[in-house]
Image (cartoon, rainbow, N blue to C red):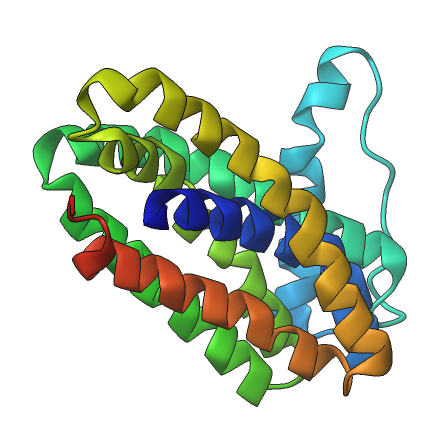
Length: 212
């Protein structure tokens, strides 16, 4: 059951952070981006637009001189998901060399710390801390799933099906965050939800994975 909860909150936090990132950026009221962020956004726009370029569709130029806009936010969202891809490419070799559960503990703790630091920060810093969470999410699925089915024996197939159904967390946690952002105290309150999700995942990596 705890493994089902882990998959539920993992998918929920991954989708939730990406879904509310633009709205979170707008709430920061950034009138002028730093030179560092402007350069990084332009570079990331080119990097994350490589797929479109393969089909002859080069990424459109973005005006970064007018502060945070939805176009800038879209680049950050793409970078968040691109970070998951990079983290997976880098993470798989690490999983072959180091204890998987130890790596899960590390990324869950880092994810909780990044979201908490973002809540306590403001401006560009708060946004980049959330973007970095994409890297933390990368190896969670390939570690949580095997941990959750270990020791199930003849119930492995049934347990696996329950874990697959738990991805519904990606459809439930983002609306909860949205509701909290609108009616429950604002976006900083809403981002407490992913922080709590990471803490649950940390608990699961430390103790909750054990077969009872």
